[in-house]
Amino acid sequence: MRVNKNDLVIILSGSSRNKKDSREKRYRVLTVDKKSGKVTVEGVNVVEKHVRPSRRNPRGGKLSMEMPIDASNVQVVCPKCNKPTRVGARFAEDGAKFRVCKKCGTDISPIAPAKK
Image 1: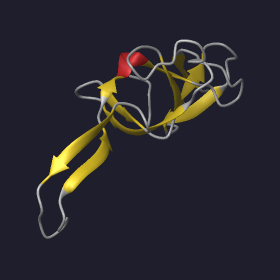
Image 2: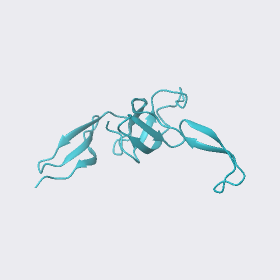
Image 3: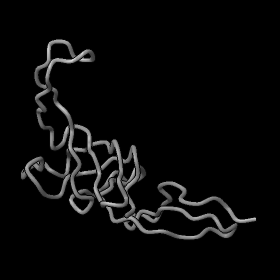
Image 4: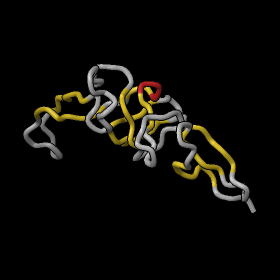
């Protein structure tokens, strides 16, 4: 899975995808769960949770919170070319590993530091 926290993504499928301008809306990834293959995206899949009155929440009521969606339903947006793209990996000459944009070929972020 090549999606990381704080990446900008677009939604490919699901109820949060707007059919006409889905390529223009960009969302920020809040959390990534690599074990289950799910990501939590800001403002997507928002549900209302009903909570009982407690010390933390004395009045109770409804809380809005984002729930995870499958990582296959999002696509990373390249920060350089500003287009949705697939993400690959490459090794630099010093042994460092980088995430790479498949469209423009620029480095998105490092994965692993250089080896000694």
